[in-house]
Image (tube, rainbow, N blue to C red; front, side, top):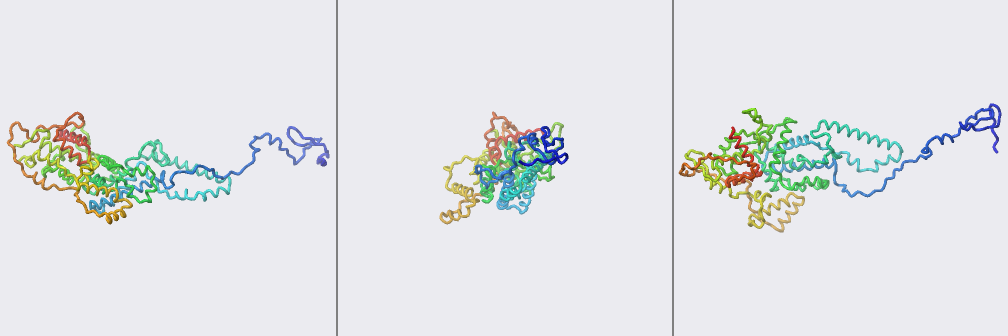
Amino acid sequence: MAPRRKCPTCGSKKWHKEPSSGLVACSEGHLLQDYRSEVNDAETLGNFTMKKRTLKSNREKKGRPSKADPKLYHGNRARYHYFQCLQLLLRKQVAALVRLWALPDAFEAVCRDLWALHISLLEQPVPPEPYFHLQEFAEPSKQKAPAQESDSEPDEGAELEELMRQNSDVSSEEEGGNTSDGPADAPQDSSGGNRKTSRRASETPISTIVILVLTCWTLRIPALYRDFIRAIEAYDLPYLDSTRYLPKSMVVHLNPGNTQALSPPHAPKALTIHTLAARLARRLKVNHETTIPAVNAAPVLWRTVKAMHGPPLLYHLVASVANRLHLPLTLHSSLAPELERESESAPHHPKYDSIPPELAFMAVVVMVLKVMYGLDGKPRVARSRDHPQSMFPSTEEYLQLLCKDDSDQTELFSSERALSILDLDPTTLDDYMDLCEKALVKGSREAGEGNELLQRFFPVEASRTVQSERWHGQEIDEMALPRSLYNASSEELEPGQGYKVYAGRDICGDVSTELETVLLRGSEWVKVDFEDLVGVLEVFERRLKNS
């Protein structure tokens, strides 16, 4: 038994423990120094203090392996890569048009500047190039190595980094909400896009066609929307199935959504191109004070008159009527100066002032033809040899010439025509096979090897080539000759009399056969719907009547 310790103060060996405080005292009440009982301390605290401290395990949980293709890009990286593909497609389109139309070298420089301005005006800006993407995801083992050395510091650093990232995201959203054009409270996903809305038209491949159109307007090149559509349908301008024009190293990273966006099923419509071009021209004027000039009207008007097989006199008549109508001939009505209003109720910009110029000229051409021929089943005969109608052919001759099928190879194989391959003659069939070869073989990655094999083992003679624009000089010379005047009677109408205005929105109305032939030819050449041309014609006729 261990000897009892004496009290250093009184020498007593009798000790007892006080139940209230847990201290040891002698019989005289002196406390024993350097003694502490931890029983009461442990009982007053919670149970969590009895748990031992353990180190955090860095072992990764085993999960299912991801089946996603690691080569496909998503999020901001996919969006940046998508615009890279669009830019490369635009460069190939510029090279194709320069070679096809013999355009000047300045065409490429203007396209590059307009593309840069277009990118700066996007509602959702293009994300920056992900420089650190490989450093973040390529070597995860090196990033997790410092976590094994310390216990609490990596967790605190990760939490601090996460808080800083969230703070930067909130601040950027607040700053972006004040300057963006779209709604500030629109729900956006992690890639910066809106989940509830589809891809905007300004981000589709049609935007590259819009850049080409604006460049032609800037350089005063008289290119029409039908020229771009025909070049696309003939596969001379890269647009349809554009992924085959991109290198394989870029195509392999396209996700299904971007691949579908880069592969439009058909050529764009003329009114769609004009609407997007007018919108971009207006935004360039407002944001960058860059004005797109008016169209080069003289060549466009001459091409319209020639397409309708009119004599040279028709050009001067249409120009006079167009001047009377005050056609602005700009991409957007806001880019043209305001007209002097005859009354307070008159609009600053009349209706249909933002339509394609070739559509406006075609409507005026139909107006002049209605004045000369009537196109209502009743003949119009001039009573004087000096009348302009003497320089026009008869109604039957003109309609017969207008109905003549003079379409070229591209127009013949257009998707808008209901054509069966069983109806093709051997020459036309060869032209169709050439078009198929251009669409399916040329331009692809294996085009060089395939063409060499075809030329080596299956040599084929070159087929007949058809010019893109045939010149009907012989027919125009015949039409320009003064025709014999009929013996006009008092019951026959003169040119300009009995002019009928058809309502474009009257679905129950019936247009005469002669006028329908002219309107069908005009709408087909301008690449618009029949109803659109009828509506513009009605507005111009009423405007000319009220002027």
